[in-house]
Length: 297
Image (tube, rainbow, N blue to C red; front, side):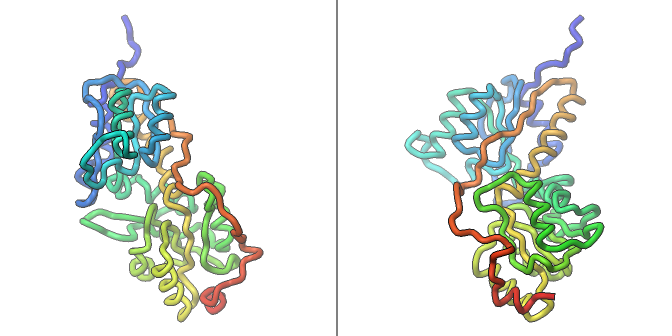
């Protein structure tokens, strides 16, 4: 009698994903769920990635993956053609022609417990955390304390060791020797949460996609006080990539509990859009900005 685990169907894998990251927990503007695939098709191998780029889809085909699970949606905004003359059309066509399914878990993974926020908090060294923001009734981002204070430079280096490498690295606003303990984190773009960061009395805010004006204004506000919160821009791709190992572990456990077998792999494609940086300076060579000078402890 064959007692080996059964091959999972796409329907079963989607059910497991939606148990872990309920689609109804996604924000109202988001587009999550199954994008391509037949619910009855078999799934033997799953590839996890941050973005459903053409390179990720090609990697899935090379690895004979039946399903790609990504954080960011492929079709967040409406399109009117799937011709291969556009990137979106080429992606959809590649998925359909190769019978590769695509599932996206975006803001429903951001607000999950554990989810994207907890993964970034753990990378910073935080233990117990609480919500940074509550949006549409769901907790988003995390706030917590390090076991021991450390320098801003050491926190940035800790993150650099735990994040996937990118051309842009990690940008920091604040003196590298400044002591920090209370840390606010928000994976992905986070420059709309400065009021909540100030309200939680964070020493440093770790997020990404910080635009010039919101970041400058935040540092100006900090300069009239004690210089906090300092800013760490860890990069959008890198800060959310941290969730993928947790996703792999939780999905694998869910499928095993269901009596099915699925191979789960994490994409090796770096979907950060930048390739190189010229003229970047490290903390030893950077001249502190006016804000940083005034805010030094």
